[in-house]
Length: 202
Image 1 (spheres, one colour):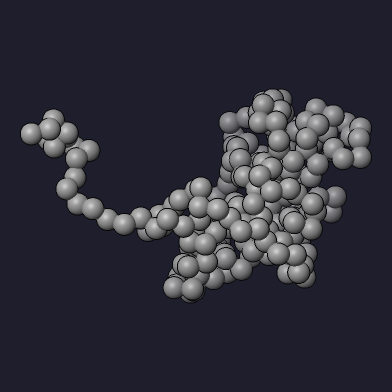
Image 2: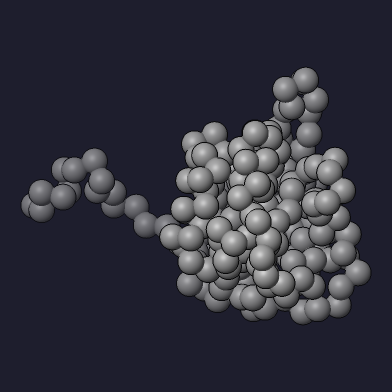
């Protein structure tokens, strides 16, 4: 008997995994369970907020089309700061629907200088979506910009062309909802996402 048969990693059962892209799987879930809550979160003041699969799919598609109107190219990287909110899911799925590669970073674990180094190390990051929960790091990061060219907002990160906020009261920066609003009016087609990435949702 193979030594693997007595290992905890051995299992005789077989099951099928859906060979499907993440955006297509989200659309399936939205069709199958439109009113089921995909995410539930609570704010620090005790407010409950949720989003259904149908809402998540619709708003993610709107976000993707909004990004497309800004000329973000397929296979380029968009940095998305990690936070427990529905906007984070919309930004993540919407970026994938637009053919972009979301790079998740935590403002709790990085200084502004480290974010600059990380984005330069990636080399093709063209946009970043920030969540102002750590406003100190956000402001320090923005202070590194020193805009010097028409195509880049930062001399420190030359590939970076756009910065957005998940939520913000600062009118200088576009929010997730505002990008969704733009996308809702767009007739631009979204790219066909290949099956290079597979996922199984429970």
